[in-house]
Length: 394
Image (cartoon, rainbow, N blue to C red):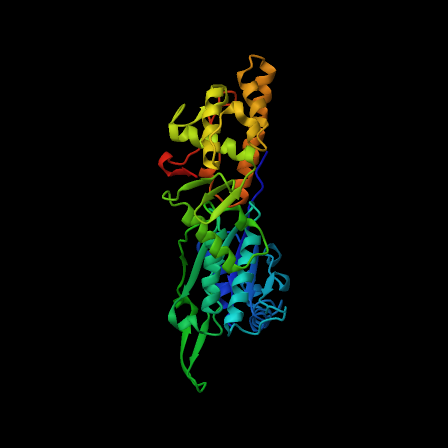
């Protein structure tokens, strides 16, 4: 089956100089030979008016003029009023401009939401341009691309030679050169320059893609920019191997740095079991197959568990420990020579491992703290990837 072709989206932040949109479009399509299927713009109310007036008027708009000059069907690039996203205030009013701290905060949140949404579809390729709008808009777009950008996505800034950069009539380099007038502040003509002299350069901006290392929490919509940054930083901090894995038996919690997951007695016992195997380096580097588990192992871990709760007890005294009736059934199944008992115990333990890992993931703990498995189906070994010296229980 053929893979679905990627949709190429150009995303720009723009203010009162919509020229950056057509300049970037020119650089991508005419200089780099790339396809653009859709143009998205994030702007203010004033910026939208400029875009509609100078780019999207079917007769005089520079976007349509560009398409005519380079023999591009304008219908092949989706770019109209519906692809312009207006920044808004907290109460939903359209922003005329970004002037205050509140305005910047709202802009950051909305830019983040837009980039997050555009990068959800694996069949899209996003090219984000930071050239236009207020400087903070470009900064927030860069930050959003760091949080959500994928391997196929790009970030750039379009650069234009000085005399053309601020010229109100320069929007791209046409195939047939045109003369533009340079005037002073009073409107007097100083000289004429040809568009043949214009130089346009698309500067690629390398950026760190955090999408692969941040938690699934960041894929969820509805959070603010500062929430995203705070959680991403926590995730990066948790990647530090110096963090200890603390098993608080009395509180039934698995704790790493500032994050913790609360488990049931049964779940914590199983997690403690694999942590103990890791510390003792049982099996292959602390990973053990379910067939290798015996009653002596269960008794040893049960004693560690109950000792941490105040009174050491063995498997024979399980009745003295509330909510531990399961341990007797488990021990009987492990010791049984009946294949059905063996299968029942493996199934029960497999289900418990899945529940434990789901709780750890929901709490935002990195993958190395879950109960991992190695090997092929039927010969899997289970354990933790945490250095033994970093495992502490109390």
